Image 1 (cartoon, helix red, strand yellow):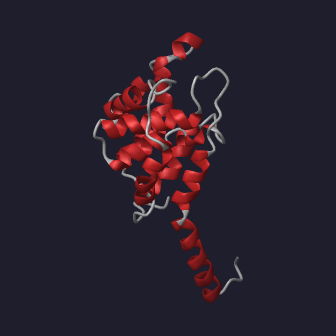
Image 2 (cartoon, helix red, strand yellow):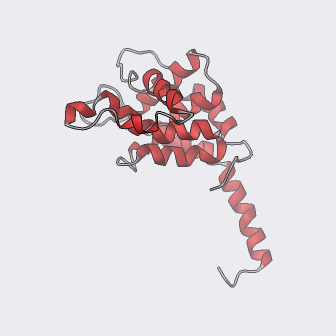
Image 3 (tube, helix red, strand yellow):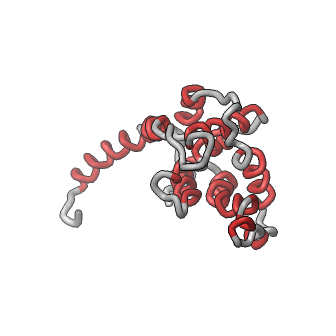
Length: 177
């Protein structure tokens, strides 16, 4: 790379911008493949995501939060030990600081519902009690995550959310870091 010319990098940038512009389509394709489940769960990862997004939309949340709800567990397949950070990294350039923080922290905040059953500290989230998005993250977990494993819930199909995903990922990035 150190021997590249300006022309080389302008050529590459053109292709990288096109590739970046197709991010929403790659995300939707990936999400459509999440139709298996972890052993023991009653719904697939896709259905969990669809329930989360459907509940967020029905509650009148912004498109940004609906898309965040849809994608909050996208990291489960490839980054099971830090899935929320993975999902947040995908969203970060296109969403507000608040939405980024909620998605990034939801994994830790979710432990409130089960950590004590496994010998862990269910109150780990309390270390963030003074954070400005603390309550918003609790609300996100309560409303759009922990209760979205119902095999009888009628969620909207993935195609319903495609326009929102495309809209969010076509935004001018808030940040690139």
